[in-house]
Every structure is written in structure tokens, then in C-alpha cells.
Amino acid sequence: MRVLTAAEARALDEAAIVDFGIPGLLLMEHAARAVAEAARARLGPGGRVAVVTGAGNNGGDGWAAARLLHAAGAPVRVFHLIDPDELRGDAATNAAIWMRLGSASPFAEQALDYVGAGDVVIDAIFGTGLSRPPEGDFAAAIDAINAARVRGAKVVAVDVPSGLSADTGRPPGAVVQADCTVTFAARKRCHVLFPGVELCGEVEVADISIPPQAFLRLAARVRLLHEQWVRNLLPERAADTHKGTFGDLLVVAGSQGKSGAAAMCAKAALVGGAGLVTVATRRDALPQVLAHTMEAMGLELPGAGALGPGDEEALLEAAAGRDAILVGPGIPRGEATGALVARLLAEASCPLLLDADALNALQGQTDAFLDANVEVVITPHPKEMARLAGISVAEVQADRIGVAQRFARGHRCTVVLKGAHTVIADPDEEVAICPTGNAGMSTAGSGDVLGGLIAALLAQGLPASAAARVGVYVHGLAGDRRARVRGQAGLVAGDLIEGIAEVWAEWKR
Image 1 (tube, one colour):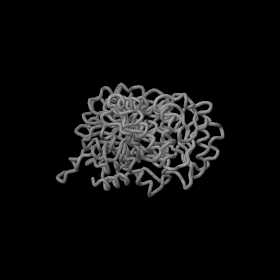
Image 2 (cartoon, one colour; image 1 turned 180 degrees about the vertical axis):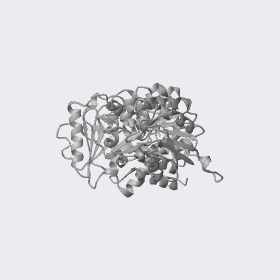
Image 3 (cartoon, helix red, strand yellow; image 1 turned 90 degrees about the horizontal axis):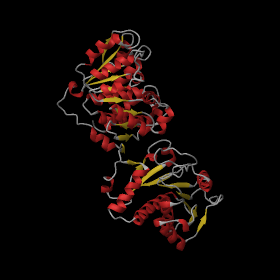
Image 4 (cartoon, one colour; image 1 turned 45 degrees about the vertical axis):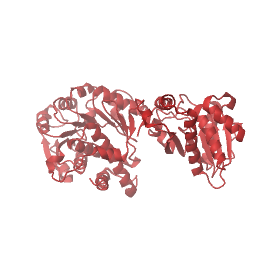
């Protein structure tokens, strides 16, 4: 499922109109019909519809939706923020048609006071082109719509809740809180990025007759993951196999007091399908790791304290012949750890996944990624991403797609930027956004489980891009499955491992 920027959405409309000869008025009619149907579905018995219109096509969709609802017998009132005489093109046409059928009033501060429970407000003020905070009557209209919602009215937004940036998913000022957002042809970035996800309510993607060929005109590189696409990335597990078939994974993780991180990684990797898992860790942590992961093997690292030069030869020897390596969760980190991780990057002969303190150790040394001759996956949370990129956490969160995309391209690695709706970016700039997962997964060890699962998929031969996408999606889905049983507050990382097994069972894998 493609996810578009505002510019890409405009280009898609233009391609449909110019390249394929579809009249804009027809596209607007289809859009308005979808909006009207969403409004009718939310009307209570005897409910009324208030339509608040702005300029451009978004306002035009509102005028046309008012006509369609009127034709269906619903009581409709239109309140305009732009005088109909100032409108142009298809919006002007639909406004003129409505004025022959009903009446419209300029928006005033008390205009929506009559709206309440059982009623619907259609927000057709701003579309995808918003670039500054709403002011004056526009801000007042947004506040009035939200007040009507507090009184029990349902709010249906046209394309984007007014006041929300279509590209960042963040409001620069006053913003409509919608119960439903009807968007056209494809989701926009604000529909899949927080906080936009919560402001949009239920998102309905309407087919407005834009042909599939029009999408080929776009350079859109962002997609929303969905189950069937993810499942198609997984290879079949043949009957005539053995443990070596599904990969030999080395996990470099854990330390005294952090043995759980290593155990979580190893267990998740085994449940994720890896045939063999070996945990390399310090002597004082190894017995605890193996006690919690009986199916894993152990390797004692010879050094003391932080990982560093004393561990290099042992790790390089252990890495030889493996199918994938995971480094980072719970490792003891010191000044020399970055150099060790950099050497692993330069000399590894199988895919590498770096997480947690392996990433922190590379702060200021990110050129080491360019020395790798194998596929590399990194799984930072926003703070780790900020350290790697040399920016603030706020800057990461303000542009999650762009930050992940630029780092992946510049450092030739696959970036899994964790968080609500995790972003996965490839070196070739393809980006996927994961819709699965929930707030209950914000718990210690959740990232360790994700790392183990992705590493297991790498060990089974999936390319880095596919392993990251499958791992993130399944990890989130596992959390959603377990949250239904345990609740979000009661969810712990160990539940996610059980949830992964449940997903495999459901998918018959």
C-alpha cells in the first residue's frame, strides 16, 4: 500500500486528469460520494449534517458531499470560510450547484452550536496543502468542530483533518480531531505517522477512479506494510530439512546484570525459526543466559569488563561460518567497544544486525558502516538514532521517514527506526511503515525480542530488507495478539515470544 506526500498526491491527480483524460469534476464527484457515505454511516436517527468548507478541491469535495447528502434526504447546512464567488474551477461548480438546491452561510463563531449527539460535521476546510498554523476564522472553525465533537457529534474529515500537516503527521497549530478521515486513492504520510494517526481516527481509502497506471508516474518510495505482502516474503519450510537448513546465528549479547537481554534475543531467534543459536557473552553471565534458554548454545568470551581488544580474535573465530550475527543487547561497553564493532563490520562474511550498545559504541564512528561487505541491519530507538545521526531526538521524531531514509542511503544499511509505527528504510531509499504493535510493547526487552527475530530471519537467508520488514510486522502482530489476552499494561517482553509462535501457527509456518 503506497503512502504519499502532499506533492505526490497532487501529481497523482494531475496524471489522472492530464495523462488519462479523467475530468477533475468526475474525481471530485467520486470523492464527495465517499465522504457522503461515511457521513451517512455515522448519522444518528434524525441526525443533521453540518459541512464546513474552505478553498480549493477540499472545499469543493465538501460542497459536493452536501448535495449528495441532501439528495439522500439528510438535513444539511453548509458554512463556508471562503465566499463561493471567490472559488474557482470544480469547487466553484459544486458550490454553484449547491446554491441552487440549498443555502449556505458564512462561518460564524456560534455557527455549530446547534450540532451535538447524533449529528455529523464534515471538515472540508484544508486539504493536503497546509503549510502554516491556521489563523482567524479558520482556527475558530477548527475549535468549533472539536467542540461539536465533545458534545457528541461525529467528525468526518475530507482527505486530512484540517490543521494537520500531510507530510509530517504533526499539526503546526489548531487541528481537527476526526472520528473518520476519508482519503482518496492512497494514504498520505499523516495517516500513518504519529500523532496524525490518532487525529485521523478511522482512515477510509476511497477509490475515486484514478487508474493504477497513474501510480507509475510517481516516484513514491513509501509503503504501509500489510499482512499478505509480508507473508509473501517468507520462504516455504520444506519437509526434508534439518537444523542447518534454517541458519546458524551468533548472538553477542548480555553481561552481568543484563543476562536477560541475551536470553531474550536467543529465545526469540529460536522461536523465529533459526536452526542453531549460539550466545557469546562473559563468563559471569553465560550460566544465567543458558538457564533461561536451554535450546541455545554458549560461548564464553575471554576478556574482562567492556568488550574490546581482548575479545576480537575469539569473536572473529566464532563468527566464521555463521549465517548471521547479532551484536549489542546488554553488552558491556567501553571506549574500545566501537573499534571492536567496526572490525566486525569490516571482516564479517555474513549479514550483521547491530542493536543497543553496539550502536552507541559507533557514535561518531558511523563511517565504519561503509567498510562492511555484507548486508547490515540496525535497529535503533529514537535516542540511539539521534546519537548516530548527530541530531536531537526531537529532530528524529519530527522527520522519522526522512532521518531513517537519509541514514540508510548514506551508510548503506537497512535502518529499523523503532517506535509507534516503526519505519524501515533501505539503502536504495525504499521505506516501509509498520501498522502493527501497541503501547504495551513499550517495555524492557521488547527490542531484544525484535533483534532476535530479525536476526533469525537473516540467518534463514532472507535479504536484509525482507528480514527487517517481516520481523517488525510479526513482532508487532505478536504484541497485538498477546495484548488481547494480557492487556497492554500487563504485557512483558516474554509474552512477545509466545505471540510470535502464535503468529507462525496462524500462518501455518
